Length: 85
Image (cartoon, rainbow, N blue to C red):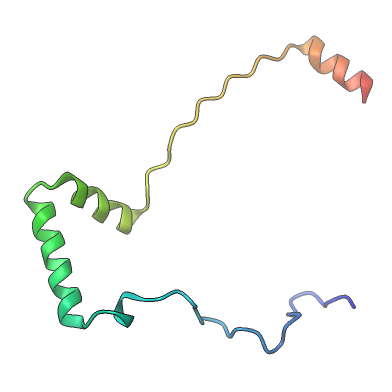
């Protein structure tokens, strides 16, 4: 049976917005979370490089890593490949 465009195959599936990921609030109270955030901020402002990196990565994402790629292809190689296919 084919599905229509935009139609789910599992009508009784997980509702939109539902998540199975645990949240920090499942384990800690608001006061505890506030204390952790305050300590993280204090460490970062004091120059703790690991904490600075963690805060930046959590808020803005990890920096993209440069990938170097070296390819050596001649027009003759391309022509030969095209002739064989």
